[in-house]
Image 1: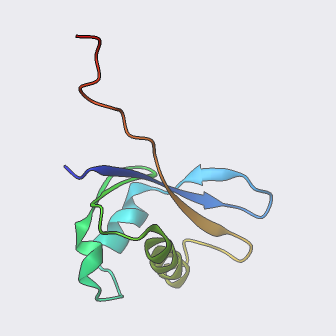
Image 2: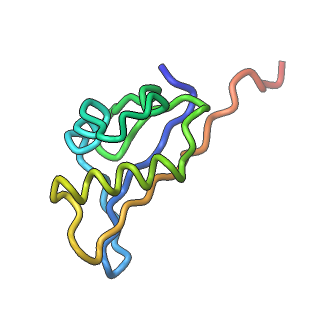
Length: 96
């Protein structure tokens, strides 16, 4: 649906990464406490996966999601959230 595909991972104190459950991501998307309409351009699509439009700034999204996850108790002390854009496949660049 959206052009960008983002990975949303919990990183523990040792650096181990784990995809955030889709229910965490959905909880943020549906009950966003920031009241910032910019986050309306997000769609949870699976564990650790979020689709988003181009107008979503990753830094702001990461901070807002991390704050929300901490408030909900999803992230513990020593853990952090990492949101990164996954590479997009190039469409229409065949050898025709």
